[in-house]
Image (cartoon, rainbow, N blue to C red; front, side):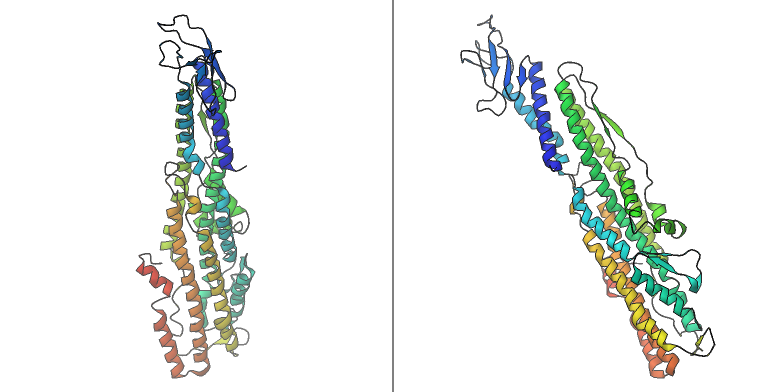
Length: 481
């Protein structure tokens, strides 16, 4: 049975118990299945009215109608055949007010709708999944990655360029090869923040649905006991606090992101610094009261407390994601440099290999420029493309009186997502264009031709404006930098 159907069933039970208790307090005992029995009320015209009356149950064709054993109908306003209660009004009251109290809670997000988006974030994290070995330094930096193709290409760069000396390769190594592991890992960490936000939402609504079903059962019991005394011991322990942090931890440690936790703490620290700390909490919500109206008042008050717990948990993640976005936006370690400056400092340098100091392996440089660099760029573009499925506010929406507001912390989540949708393709473009720059530089190293040098200068000018994604971001008011 779905959550909605289960809750509707439980709400109907609450309505039934409230009607039965309210009728009992008006001296009519019975059930919503069989109806109720009590006595007629005395009037001036009929002071000895002691007839036993039967009140038709809710849902009957003549629901709420009271009759005696002779078929005489009794009404509240009759001067002779009077009943001192208005059963139909009691029925209508609880059929109206109980559903109204729970109405918003039938419209909370379904964790199952969040799962496909969470999986898309997992896939994107796996695609971009790299972490730098803290023991490495310079050309010896090696990567361990969930994406083996990306790891292989980055490892190839470190191995092959390590055998060269000279200003050209030194500049290329400094600006790209040495920085790429850290930049890609930083962008991966930002994807993990997005995934953590989704994981937090899934866990939040999983717990909320669980606790609402428990609340409904306890409220039904409280209503059944609310017959003039002895109904004060009913309460529910709501365990929502900590859901967002727990969901974030599940995302981080549940697979591809697990190796990055330590890397983030020792590197840029975006996950360890910004994600909310785990800390489970519970709130006791009492529902017991002497009368059904008292139970209803506590239901309304208690559900407001549940909403407050949701808001408290969501506010922690909102702050976390906003802080992460600020870091991504302002920290240059989340992006590479424009591909300029190769061969810019000196005339054509001597390019030598480290082993014998003489042989120039231009074919290796061209492989890096024309194959490896575009492949790395392609992996980044594929990774950020997977995030498209993770976006969209649909599964986040709920009535505005629950939690922070109608979309929770989706606005902050979307802002970080939109930044990555520009930043990662921008980095991919920089890597691809840096490869082209290196390819032209290799031609210069081989020929020292003036026309080839002019091509390098032309390429330098061409890349100054940056990629189309960056230009569109500037137009939209959200530049990468």
